[in-house]
Every structure is written in structure tokens, then in C-alpha cells.
Length: 481
Image (cartoon, rainbow, N blue to C red; front, side, top):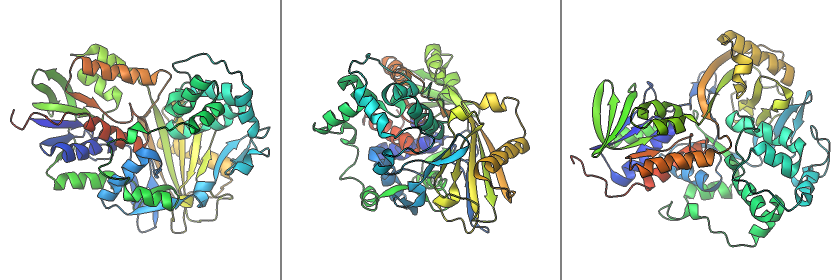
């Protein structure tokens, strides 16, 4: 019997890739939509030399997850567009706060002076951590806002951590788990009574990164070594990030893996021989299911047989995001170049941030901006279901207000991405552990990978797929059994 992968986004395609390498065929990927790639979508305007991305546009080459993606990109022979640490897009990160654009410090010297929107030097936040009492209430989890406020003060929580969470997952830092981004800092505080103290203690210990053990066949991938040597801060792909899922689909097709588009799974049930999936009104027996579906899409598939599993999956909330791409005919419109800017929630604006795409990559004399809106506050700002024109007008209004760009865009695109980013609210780690424990206890032939469980970034979901495939026993039932 076959292994079935549900979902043809980047995690599902990666799962197919790693399954193929580990077990060979037979294997089928089922994708509900008529295209692969999920939220990764690139619109390349070749005649004008510019690119719109309605999802992510860059990948960070950091850590084990970054190395893993670079190995995959190298194996697929994809042309890379690196952005080095010295590039303006890597150096300059901005906030729009208190009515002005604020350039965030990008060197240790920036910790000494007072830079807007902060009212005192940032080194004072580090002193706050060192001088805050050593007795810490032992918590399993807390919000990242609460943690940052407790250790570094309210200004850091409001103007550094909160906008960063908006940029990463369009979420509210007061609800997001500290384990989402700062798990190691949180654990150092819990163990040593302070973040800085914990970092100093741990530097003197020989910490072996268990996550690297057995992941790579040989040494670290050569493209990762190149990225480290050349100090890449991030990278994109020629013609946009959608080239990655397209290349994966092409590779899988060339190795006889069936990627079925417009093939939504309507039901998933389990029995002593494996599982049965219902696709296009046909019941198909499969040996094992790897689901890369969003948790809220998997829940109704298993509800009849496993209602408590469905309920746990539905405990993972999602948010809607509006993405507005804008193209202007001049490349001289931005007063300050950089990766873009974020808007802290305390500013109470519908805009989460603006990405300066044409600063990251050459756009042939165009200024390309991507405005992100809504997220955790989508219903507050857009619950009345505004038209595409209204959304475009709101985005342009704030581009004028924040960036002082008075010109009208020549070309634009509006995407409303419904339930596109899972929210790792307080208790998320335990929630995922309970879900996977349920699957293990009931011996269900089901693996879960993707953004709902192991991180929301491209690196995270690819590594999630690899790790789940690695956990499968090699003695899978042979074809025909």
C-alpha cells in the first residue's frame, strides 16, 4: 500500500521528498487546490522587471533549520540570490512609532545612546534583567510579552518584541508563547534566575546540539558553509520563492511520485491495516498518512473516529492577513532604504508592517512595496469584509502617511489570506505534545508536519517534514501488503 501525503504546500512537498529518499515509492501527494506551494506565491512581471510575493520572499540561512533548507535548495539546483550582512536590507530595520520612522540599532554602539522610540538607552534593559531579583516563579509557559516586560521592561515589550511578533506571525505578543521564539532564553531564566546570567553560565558549558545528530549524511551542507563564510543574512531565489515548491514538484514527478492537484481529502479513518482516505468520492487504502494540512483542516477529517483529537487540533488558532503589493514607476521614492518597517500594536493602526522589496532585490527601476495588514486584529479592522478596492485604499493611505509617498501606484495586487498563520499561544508546546501523544497511544499510522506544530517559517516547516519522516521505521509494509 502507498504512503499518502495530505497537502502540497512546502511542508507536504518536502515530506514527499524525504519519504522518497528514505523509502522510495509508492507515494502520492494530495493537494486540494489547483497549484502547489500553499501560501508561497510569486508573481513575476518579466517585461517590467519586478516581482510580487504574496507570501514569504526571503529565507534565513541560520542554524540547523537554515542548513537543512540550503541542502535541499542545493540538491534541487536552484539559483540563489544572497543578501549579505553588509547589505542595506540586512542592516536597516525600522519601526513606525510615535508618528515617525525609527531606525533600530544595528550594532553594539546602538545600545549606548537613546534612539527613538525608546526613552532611555537599550543597555538599561540588560541592566534591568541583571538587577531583577533572582527568585523566579517556575512557569511552564507564559506570553512572550509578559516575559519581555518582566526581564527587560515595558518599552522593550511594546516597541521591540510586540512588532517583531507582528512581523513573524501577525500575532499579539500578549497571547503568543515565549517558547515560540525565546524558548532558550526562557529556560535560562527559569534555571539560573536571569537571562544574561543564564547566557553567561551556559557559555562555559559544552553544549552538544542534539538536533544536529544524524540529520546530515556527512558534514554540514556545502551551501550552508558558503553562506556562513560569505555572511549571508538571508537569501531569495531567482524569479521568486515559488520556484522552490515548483522545483520540488518537478523533482517528485521525475521520480514517479504522483502529485494530485484539485484532490481534496474529505475523510480520514484508521484500521488495523493502516488508513483510508476519501478523495474525489473514492475510498483509498494507504499504509501511512503524513498530514501537512493546517490543524483546522485536519480536525474535521478525523472527527468522526477521534473527536478528542479533532478538538485538540482545533485548539490551535489561526489568523487572517491582508497582503497588498504595490508597484511604482520610480525607484527614488523611499527616504530611507532597508528591509522594511514594522508597526507596534500600541500605535493602533491596521498595518502590521511594510516590506521594501525593491531594497532587497533589484527591481529594474521600480519601487515595490508589500503592505501587511490585519492578523490578530483582522476582525477589528476588516470584519465588515471590505472590497479589494477598500483594502488597497487603506494600504495606500498608510503608505502615504508613513512613507510620505504621494505618487499613485502603477500596479497593485490585493490578497486576503484566510487562516494563513497558526498562533502559538501560551501552552502551545504542551498542546502539540498532547496531540502527538494521542496519535502514539492509539497507534495511528499518522504523522503531522508543517506550520501548526514545529515553527511557522519556511525553514521550520521543511525541517518538520524531515524530522517526522526520519521517525518512521524503515520496515514499512512493502507494496501490495
